Image (cartoon, rainbow, N blue to C red; front, side, top):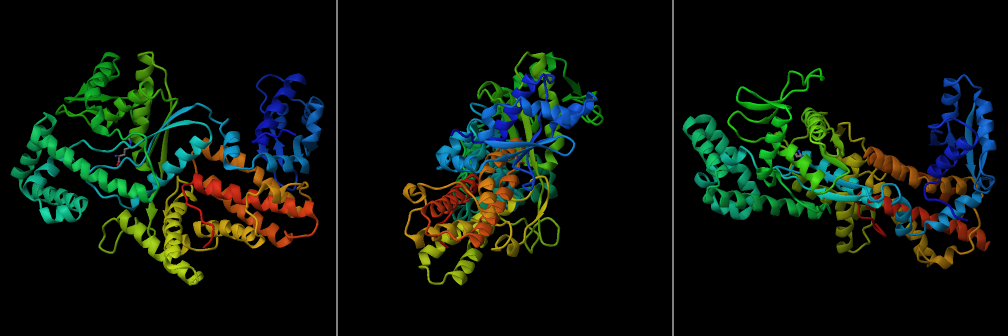
Length: 584
Ligand code: ARG
């Protein structure tokens, strides 16, 4: 029996075809959803609205629709009409079994999922920190959400270009270069280069505030850099290289990678075209020496300008981002461009997108889709922006180190018998995983409170809970002496039968809609919630139904459920960027 990866999507297509046969008007949307398990597996709510709008009897329309369903559907699911005109589908146990047998490896799951976005070119701009500043806790969201989104989109068939759009150009370099030339401490630079750069910037900034002559000197360094002065360009390169090395170390720890790192400076020679085209298209105008774009149709942006070139002629964030939009569209042939930043940049991206749409329309370019993927802030336990005791932002390096330390203490309490090297390795996965999962499991639009006890708890929707659930299934197989993906152990499995088996099997087939929802909204918390519920469903099953029974068909089907739960938990956690373990 062939069973599709996303059964709900398949039923959606079947219903649309049936609607045509039944003579419903084109454009009928069956509104297929995952059903409340008490009523079925999948439900279609679309008949109600359709009938209401046309003053028809919804039950009559639903009856017509059911009659037009292909007869072979009866082997897959049982369809019925409920209430005023809902259509419910209850999957046959044989369908559930067929699904579990078909999607037996992460590659097979992927081959099902890759139909979602096959060939869609998607540029994802994430992390994108500014040079010469340390990564701090505020950077973590963009990094882990971005990495998860890239993995998920790739798994679902998109061709993803991961771009780290480093802030490597701009006015901060005047002070940085001046500071580097006059205030540098070479020992400190050798010991912790990024730390020293950050100190230099702060010291130069303070000096410039006190002494206008120093401010002028810093500005002069910037002008020299922008004019291509060899010494300043070399320093600029050196500063960027120092930053890049420090960033790379954190990316390695968090298992984050990029295909390209095209920073703001990459667009320097592409800005004139932006100014020229926007001026020629009469979208940009001079205002007090600056080049600006207004959006008369917008309540705020009709008076609040989008400044695309400053009055001193220098480029800014908007200029480079416009050039970036063009480059990603033309060079990378992006169908979708997604940029991750915190919500505070919403105005900038709204203006950028309004401007891009008009610009591309005037110049006859194909418009990609644009997603500004925003996220809220991480708060301390007092509900305020998270800070160290001295009031500085918490460095990401320090946060990750603390996470691993705390996880080591926990693991040592729980499993003192494990060799130390293994406990250290587990602590890495649990500590880093906990920080990451704490972030991903929250709706990215909201702020969240970072609390060590909560994120490292073995209870609730946390990394330790899920990583532990994975190791527990591994240990079931270890005790049995069979490999979890051993085909022989699950051969001859019969279809799920008990309530707990059925509920778990249904939840497993829910992986497809969970992936679809997560990628459609670029919100990893949907996948987190699904995995958490799956782990819960597994616990219920494991308590209710003994796995090692004598009847070989029953035993095989229960082992099959164990194996597939393990497969989907591991696959899902890895898509979120977590490293899973076999024991802890
Ligand atoms: N460097 C910016 C920041 O730290 C983020 C850049 C996001 N990407 C972009 N194309 N603007 O806030």
